Image 1 (cartoon, rainbow, N blue to C red):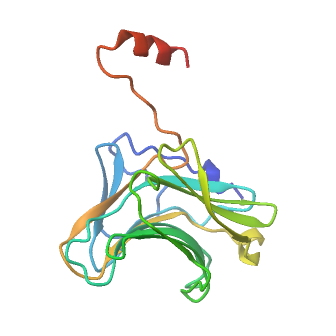
Image 2 (cartoon, rainbow, N blue to C red; image 1 turned 90 degrees about the horizontal axis):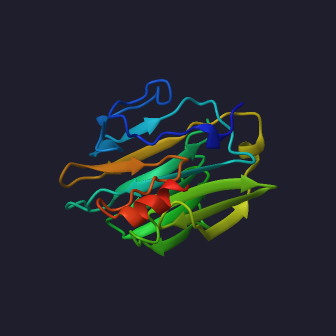
Image 3 (spheres, rainbow, N blue to C red; image 1 turned 180 degrees about the vertical axis):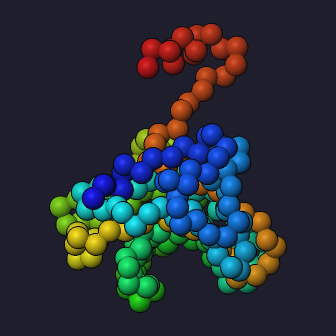
Length: 208
């Protein structure tokens, strides 16, 4: 089975790739180089095939969460890696109502050891979930290149078993103003473009 790190999409072509994302639901599109998903009470997500393994691999993505928009309980965007058993998953969730980044390994929709941090849109711009040698690691990055570890935990047995998982980019709000969440640079480092007219910087970037 392919590793989760082999699922790559920069969302730059303006067309949802149905081969990479066959299970999408809700209202979704690609706009301005990002995956866009309507954030409303009915849930919405980009969903890959259930064909991947996280064992010895990783998933990273840039998250642009929705606005709180009057929601009373939650208005979130998350990277979700679910098991076939409902409520069993690993996730990195940004909730604009609570103002928290929550890093969880859920069983029956709950993780009593979940780690939460006050959401920082710069420091937590990118999230990554990785697995190696029996350890799950949640990390964040401001640029998709330099990562800071935020949590580690023992790898659940289901992650390294033969069952396959999907990669899901999900959003939902319980109420309030319908808007959207966006995601970018799935398993890819963003391309840095030098400022227009800066020939010295352009020459520097051309070397790489």
